[in-house]
Amino acid sequence: MRYQWFSLILILLLLTSCGGPRVYAENENFKSDSRYHRDFQLDSSTLCDAAQRVLLGDGYVITKGDDQTLTGSKEFQVKEKSHAILQVYVTCSQRTNGSTLFVTATEEHFDIKTSRKITLLGVPIVAPISLGTRSETDNQVKTRGETVTERNFYNRFYQAVQQELSH
Image 1 (cartoon, rainbow, N blue to C red):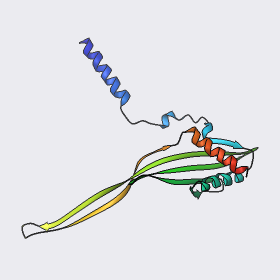
Image 2 (spheres, rainbow, N blue to C red; image 1 turned 180 degrees about the vertical axis):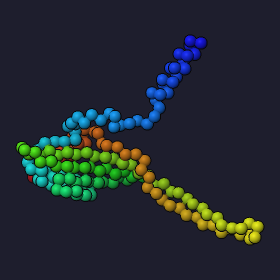
Image 3 (cartoon, rainbow, N blue to C red; image 1 turned 90 degrees about the horizontal axis):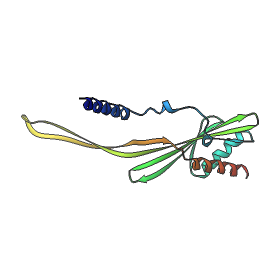
Image 4 (cartoon, rainbow, N blue to C red; image 1 turned 45 degrees about the vertical axis):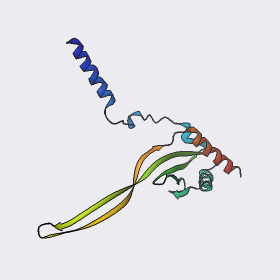
């Protein structure tokens, strides 16, 4: 009897520890992470212009917010009916002795899903003829998305900005 209660409690503990959706906000501690920002000894406008030129030079489409924010987007064909979008969010913030370049990138993956719809219309007793329509629709479905956390990605971007500033 004692063994059965112990087994039951153990099973319940295992089920509760594995169950439920993961909540990412609980793990946020808002500590500064060096991969997402870099300080430069120049004004924020010059810094943002250099970051924009780096993104444009690598084939990104730019969307500007204000003078200090911009987003670069680039699409990649993964397979015939699937693609990925890499978005780089840039904010330039003026400081007393220069400015800080904040960068965050997200990668989103999409698939094209085809949905089929068949509609039949008819009155079997009165007229044994049925009329039907078929339609197919392609829809883009997001399959996953996440923030890019690879340090080398951000380091390559900061190095490219530094190189652009030295021209």
